[in-house]
Length: 229
Image (tube, rainbow, N blue to C red; front, side, top):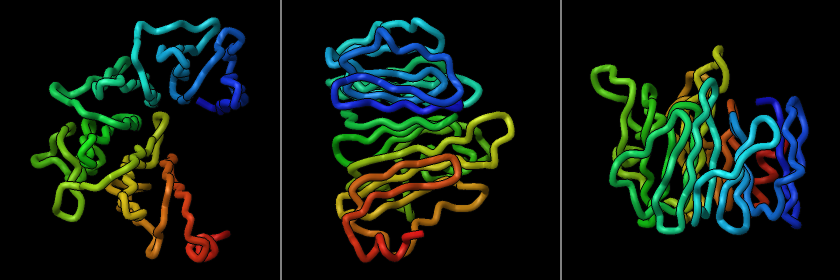
């Protein structure tokens, strides 16, 4: 997974990096996601997947969002227009999960933003990356609503899941949430340390989670100048 994808306004995809992906047949695309097998959401609400040419059209319909992840193993999620999440690869969706508006996937854990502004997580939870709380009795996996600062996380408008790719990662398993007041919260672990959101970060409109770093877009120019490098 050493490549990048870009989507232009005409629905065409460009790819660069260490890959042999062929994109000649992938047209009329509205969203993309780069994982073990990249995904493309087409305008007709179907999903195209490929790792070696020519790729294939998945048997999915009424899809409104996609996300691809995983390290050694492929893990993919798609969100249907009725708020139901579907999964394939090394991934399963907890029974009864519904009313979802956004999805995010890491290497071994996944997150779903629900219509009521709460976040549901599942998968590996050794450092609390799935639920915000470390499992009791050393259990590896867990699922449930994300808890932050002792309370169920609420008023969330966007989510992101951090990844640790490869056999020799450095312990980056975490989640991020953007709240409706423009603040950001994080949970889990980055490089073996708790996720620390910079003090004073506000007026955030978008977030992203990398392997060992986080990104936020803010409309607060004073904050932007403070953290400029």
